[in-house]
Structure formats: structure tokens, C-alpha cells
Image (cartoon, rainbow, N blue to C red):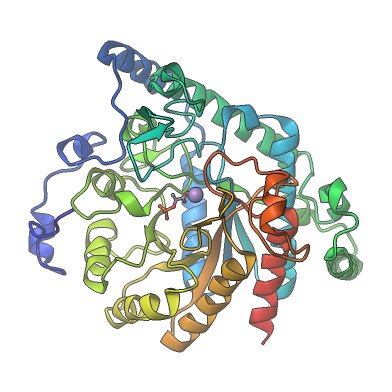
Length: 461
Ligand code: PEP
Ligand code: MN
């Protein structure tokens, strides 16, 4: 997309002269990756219904997260953001949700223990139902149909009916997000995340994991620390049994996001109340596009994916538009360069933002630059590349005098075989055994824990 019509970077007058924002001002811009709904009347009816349904998160949770992200920018917290590439409505069941929560809790335990810092836990769930696609259509055996764009839009089956965008799916997405949130909130309120009981998070299938011993040692040492603190305090330390958990998803399907963008009593401005921390993906992050226009006006903390084709100047212009007042906690950049390109592509971006004194939270997505296809037709990622990109990120930030404040990962608590490598040395042949993702390959439980351990080791160096 052309950037030529955009004002020069750092021209506050030109930016202030920009058109007024409203929850629907994005409609005046080019909106990429949007489905074409065949029936405008049905679309209006679904959006009308969605607008009157209750929101999924609250303003005070959103603003609390923004403050925590501001702390992470200052080096006082570390962000762990993870979950499926795409949730499916059929994954909205107790085992899948609690297993995903367990992995994230275990990873955060490893990080808290190793980094000696509070960890901000953000799930890629309770709304991660829309997917950008590299092609609008898919052809199989001479038949061409619209691409699958996520359960909020259409269904993955390769039939005309399945692939037809259906606006009622937005209502189903809202309901499935609410059910997921409800279960996660209930588990956490009920003590599932209690540091006194990390054994609640053990996943059956890993009792023989090559990583089990190292993890159990860590749990024992945390147990000792909790006991020690409680002995000193002479009482049970209550804030160890409650933690914060936040949600995020790609703000891709703008009519859905708009319908959940609300004003609330005693708060200025507009908030996206479908999630705490929306991000926009690499394919829709153009400065003059509809997605940037939408996100510029909501008060949530927001994130932008930054790929290898982004220039330093584009990045500075994005900051001008998305965080003109340099508000703490407001803007995160999630870089996703790939292990092969990060050493070359990341440093100029870090230097430009630092030179300009801009406040952002840098996060590493070590998944999306490392996707490849195998000879037997699987989309996969090599564990060594994922771990390598995280490790290189730490080094490149250290060299630039910036801070890597978090990681963004695609993972699941299920025993899948979608990424190769890791402690169990999964091979391409193993992918045939338990490949379940309808879109991108995810780290399984063990591979996820191994990344958390690698982060800690890197910080200890
Ligand atoms: C994703 O996060 O699933 C995704 C599509 O990422 P990106 O926009 O960085 O390619
Ligand atoms: Mn993905």
C-alpha cells in the first residue's frame, strides 16, 4: 500500500489536521482482509444484535493492564503472550481451555522464578477467531473457493456452504469468547493459579518429559520461598493465590471490533471491550489503512506486528499516529522477523525508535518469521529457529541499548506435533501423528516450557 499521501514523519500540525476519529471512521479507509458478506440485511441484523450484548472485559482491567505494560517498558515486568494461532469454536471446551491456561501458568512460573520479575500473563484467546490470509481464494482439484478466514467469518471445510461468510458467526464468536472468559475467570478466582498449589497445573502426558526434573526442581524452590515468606510474615500470603490474566486477539474483523467499542461511565473516550489488548497483524498495519485508523482511537493498550519489510521511517510514523502523546503502556511493537533475518532487520528499527526517544514495549514473536513447508505438505516451524530468534532478540536489544520486554508465542497445552525439534526431537515424520492446527503450527506443552527455560538461561548469562 502506498505511503505517499501520508504527511512527513513528526509533523504534528499535519497529524492534528487529520480527520476526526469515531468507532466507524475506519470505513473511510482501505480495509484489507475483510470478507464480503453476501447478505447486507443479515449483516446489519447481526451487528445490531452484537451492539446490545454485554462487553467481555471492563475498562478498569484494560487500564490496569496498560499500567503493567508501562512497568514492562521501564524494565520492571516481563510480558508473556501466548495461545493458539486461531481458536476454533469446537475448542471451546473445558480440557482445552484449562490445559492452555496450565501451560501459560507453568511458563510464567519459570519466568518469574528465573527473571525475578513479575510476569504479565496475556492469553491469545477468548476472541482469537479471525485470520488474515495470503490469498483470498483456495483451489483444490480444480475447485476454487473463498479462503477460510477464521471461525468468526466462515468454516474450514472445503465446501461452498462452509466457506460462505456468515455474519451470525460474529454472535457465536462473542458467545464463545464469553464462555472462555467465564471459565478462565472462574478457575483463577477459585484458586487454580494459587502459587501454593503449582501441582494443579501438571499435565498428565508430560510426567515423563525430559524437562520434568528441571521444572520440578523449580517448583520445589518456589515452594520453599513461599514457605519462607510465610514464616517471616507469620501468616499465609494471600496475594499469591490470585493472579491477573488478560486476553488479546488480532483486531482484524473491524465490524465486530466496532460493535464492541463502547463508552463507559466515568471514563473518557472509547474502549474496545471485546479484549484487553488488541493487536494488528503485519498484513493490515499500513499507516493509511482502516486497521490503523480504528486502533488509533481506542484507549486500550495496543500492539502492532512488525515484519522485515517495515522501514524505520514507517515505524516512527506509526508511533506519531498511534501514540502521539507518548503515553506509557499504550503501544507495543511485536517484531516477527524470522531467525534468518532478525540480525539484519531489527537493529535499524531499534536504533530509530531509541534515537527519537519514543516509548514503546518491544516484544518478540518468534513464530511468524519461521514458518516453512515440509516435503510431505505440512506447515511447520523448527524449534531451533523459534528459540534462536528469541535468544538473538535479547542480544540485539542489549547491543542497541533497548529492552526486550516480552515474548509472543503460538502454543497449546495439547499433545500436538506441529513444530519440529525440541527436547523430544520431533521430526517431519512425527507431524503426521498429531497435527491439529487449521492454520499455523503451535508449540506443544513441552516445547513451550523449553522456550521459557531458554529465556531464563539467556538472562542468566
Ligand atoms: C498471527 O499472529 O497469527 C499472524 C498472522 O501474525 P502476522 O500478522 O505477524 O503474520
Ligand atoms: Mn499465526
